[in-house]
Length: 311
Image (cartoon, rainbow, N blue to C red; front, top):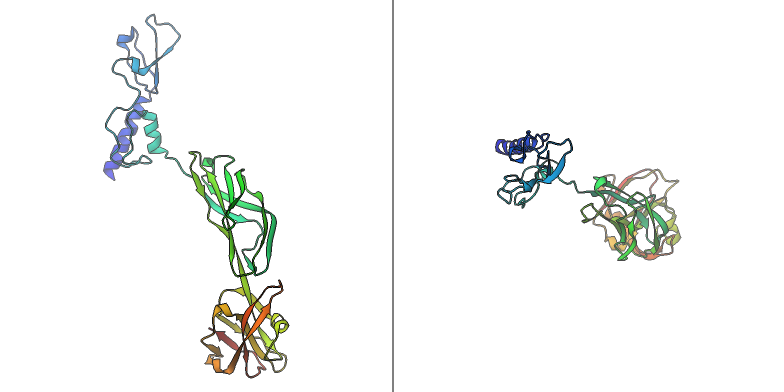
């Protein structure tokens, strides 16, 4: 660390000396002393006229505007990586690379405004949507380089769009009749013309599972949809503390057969899988899409609340 600091300090000191205001002695060019190497230097002419002329630094013997030392670099210092070829680079370029390395931008967010990321199977997403996004180091994002890509549909919705969020795009009409997903992604270019991308924004379509008290055990399609509780899910595992039923009622739990059969049921902490009966029922949801469900109902009625866990 001390060695690296010493190298940085030495470079900065040398370049600071080189950056001092131009000084010229009286007399002709043979007596000129130069302290400024910004590609050009200023010097008075032989007659010492008031006007200053610019002459290339390399035209004066012994003066060079470019770095001519060893290259490539052997250490990483600041933003200048080891192995970088700095031959014939200007001193200002080298100092800039050390002290102010380029800060590449990246997406820090990419979403569809107001769009739920979880929908029931059979739901439709359609029309114009507002894609919202944000960047780190946004000043280094090149203007009008935003692309919005439909990953699932393998097509671009927008190319060379504004980098000011949000941007509107027509997603078409998307309806899923199975438990699946649909994704979109953003692309842009930085000011070094390198493309970078966002993470995916994904909408997941899920089946609903149902649970609640019922006056009958062998419920039908309509009675399953009418159960008091439901949620979108991908798992058969469910735990609840029921309310108190109205009179003596059976407890029913129904979920897609694709989740697999239960291995255990506990009621108030006691193993109770033998106290439930399972059957298979084709259930059509409110979107008109059907799939097979396992339906578990209690063999006996409940007349008070209970803690039930399905796994």
